[in-house]
Image 1 (cartoon, one colour):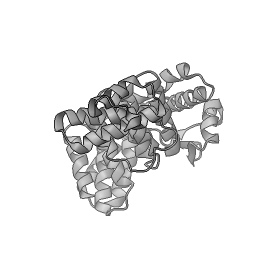
Image 2 (spheres, one colour; image 1 turned 180 degrees about the vertical axis):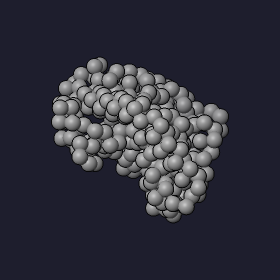
Image 3 (spheres, one colour; image 1 turned 30 degrees about the vertical axis):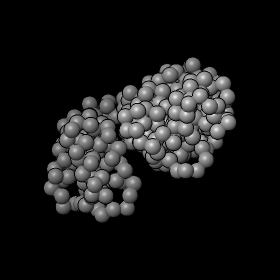
Image 4 (cartoon, one colour; image 1 turned 45 degrees about the vertical axis):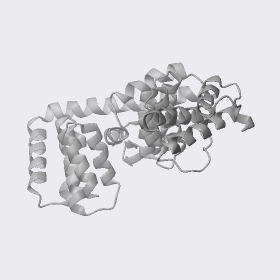
Length: 316
């Protein structure tokens, strides 16, 4: 765990705040000593304070103080924020209303986008869902900002009801609601597929990563990531992802031909530079897997021939 806190602090120092937030949040999801949890909450509060997300900052700072009430830095940060609230009451109230309205709009767009997908209208869904990634660059930020949203009965439109029915929006108090991780996972997974459909493979791989961060059990998404990395010729990233996969069969929901093609191409490019025999064997096996699925895959047939000569693969 000490490595995680060190990694988070390094990311923060380098200005990679979105990544730092996600690493700090990973710390909060573990059972660790109070001092480390307090530090993670404090740094999250400080980052959100810098971004002007005052209410999110207040939530994390309060938790940090609860965990470490004698910490001077935490106490000073809370006092400074409380003083800001006291001196700018009207502006703070207006900001609270605006932020709450923005959060409801985000929920509306996420829900509407997913509903459009279920209605087989991906073209209309894509801009709605894609627009949210600029506001929520990763799942941790989305989870933190879509928290304790005040939704009155008058604001309970069809999109909000859709999220409630799916248990993707959970009640946290009187008229207060928070996005559930299951709902965020669906959001990033569906958006990833829309990116794939629009040949935005780098963005798709990033969305799959966020969905996996939320739900590591969805290992089929790792296989889809391999395809995305290969599509943009990110061979090393493809291999790095492949090494995280088990030796079991490819799970359902993965395009087998596209996956084995990606494996063959990735190991082929690695073999060109390393001449590693194990990489060569991976190319051959992946090519054969593709050709069992589609004997007319000419590019793969040529690739296999370059490794084995002109002898047909099925006569080996």
